[in-house]
Amino acid sequence: MAWVLNGAGLGRIWGEVRHMHWSWVCGAVAFDVCVYLIHGWRWKVLLTPIRRVPFTYTVEAIYVGLFANEVLPLRAGELIRCFLLSKSSTIPLSITFASALIERMFDGVWLMACFFFCLQMGRLPGVLLKGGYILGVLIVLCAILLGWGMYNHKQSLGPIFGIKWPRWFDTLIADLHLIGHSRYLYFAFLLSGAYMLAQILPIYAVVKANGLDVPWTASFTMMVLLRLSSIVPQAPGNLGSFQWVTARTLIMFGMASAHAKRFSLILWAVVTLPLIVIGFIAVTLEGINMTHLHKEATAAAEEREKSR
Image 1: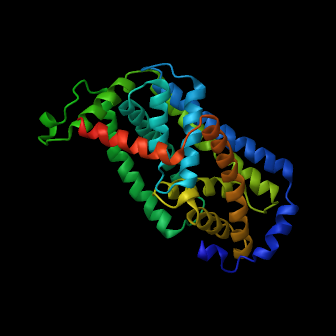
Image 2: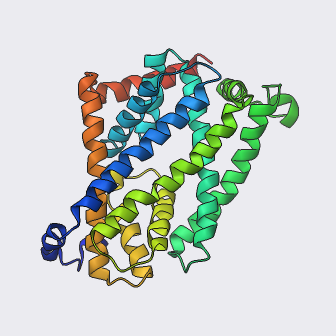
Image 3: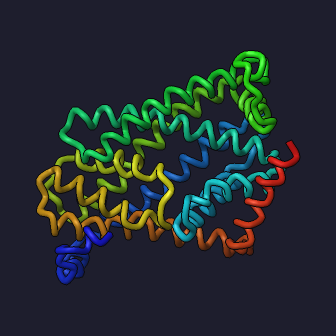
């Protein structure tokens, strides 16, 4: 964030905001909301072999989790959304965790496909380039283990690898096995592709709203690199990393440094503030105390580990 603010010429940002095309801004907000409706649909589909969860339950849990990610560090919303859905739907917490893990693996596969497409467009920032290759290796290894867990009838890894694994790991494999034997899994994988590609739309809309002279591939590359950088636990709202990645990407596409830095702040506001508002509404309507919910979710996860 210090790098972004240095030399950004913040005095000009208000003039740029006033001259934005607000129809495109409204479109960006609408697209941003739809992205997470697709997310909720995918989660519902993944859990269908276990129980038919109402679409409103998955969407509410996702938006509360997003709100938690924006106000709490280290992506605590991932734990909170699984716990909240477990409470509202009575699905065991271990199964909501397993479904979230499958989601992340699907996202990883689609993200790597998009990442290798980006490599054909130009030179990426070195730290993100290395991170992409490391992520690719981890995805391959985890996908092998995940696939084994979903399709193998044996849930114990000990006889195969000769290693004494923790009991919670065997339980996770069993839960993956429950979800894995279903045609809904393949539909969820296709929805993951739609979910990933839909995230280009709000970025592209904000680019058009600001009249930036960059190709559509800049929006695509920004989406990929922002997703890649968000994997690492970081500050609430991805503050700092979001602006750095956005500005570096636009500079790579030939935009002046100061202009790119100002745009990174505008983009963050347009795609993040609506999520905070909707998440806050969801939290308020349900009467949720976020700090209490975070502690309750953490305690439930720890209790689950001890009981196994």
